[in-house]
Length: 88
Image: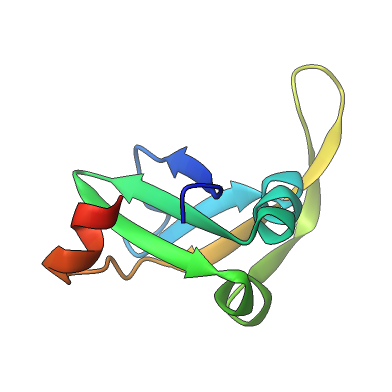
């Protein structure tokens, strides 16, 4: 559980989607999962969630360093189980 990617986001796209970059998704998948934090709420995505719930955008973006990436969206559904939040 400790060896997962942690990502803090400040806004939701359309009020219900959280966006990450494709290379962040790959790193999270390789490490076994991702924890996304937004407004003191937490959403945990395991490998299965990362694979099945990912919605890739068609448009390729460029970082300020020129590296191309695509945005990957997930529907924001924070975990409300207090026992799970204590783990993180």
